[in-house]
Length: 246
Image (cartoon, rainbow, N blue to C red; front, side, top):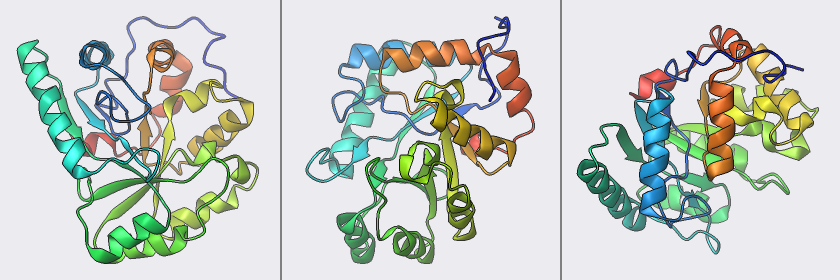
């Protein structure tokens, strides 16, 4: 496994090569991410210092747990943009969502309801960590038929797939892009998750890297990873699409 903490880090390195963070929970008081506008402002400043030029916020949409919708998310985005203007923060910020794949989401697709996307109709989807979504294949198909480009969030973190690397190829074969979390490469979520993330990286199977930023612990670990020479050597050969979202 790769270790990003054994060798001396280079303080001159950052995450500017990514340019865009396309998975974060920075909009305040919407889900299990940041709570206050002050937090959002502070995090945005520090992520800008790390080299990011755009932040795409993706609040969870999970019926019964995080009952978010475009009607809640988009006005919150406007509040954040106004706060950024007042505080002279010039980093770009957008909002989409992280959709839990289930029957409700499938029904939303079938009904043609508004779905929050970014870039060229990219849409971020996820599953429960406890069990896979039984309708995942159908949802990917339905999204693609309607012109969306599905991205599976953090496939390396689904414990029921660990060791079954063929499943990643199946997702790609269905036309679903893969996004890993930065911190998965550090062992932050455990060694098995790190091993899966490394497999995906070494086999150039990922299209996006996201922070999945929720709290200060994530931010501090991201700062450490940003200066890792080993991480940069690993990432420089990846065919990432983050920059295309700028």
